[in-house]
Length: 69
Image (cartoon, rainbow, N blue to C red; front, side):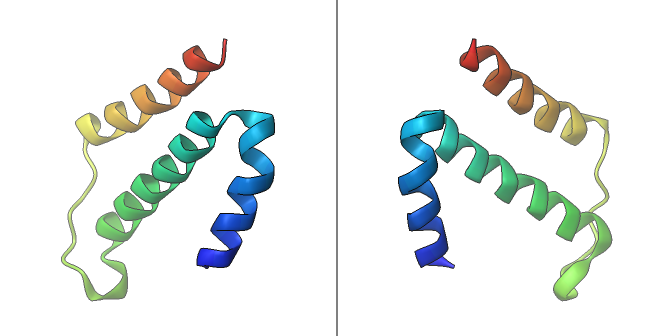
């Protein structure tokens, strides 16, 4: 996984912007964590996502779209 990440960032970073590429990696990790918590996957306690969690993820996506302009 680390090799895939390093190779992906190496090729995508210069085309997409290094900050944006890293931000999307972090956004993917946060979305994955929310899904895992919401459904209680891998034996973690269930923590349902609420409106504030959805708003936070939405704001992160909007921030990237605004930064790209």
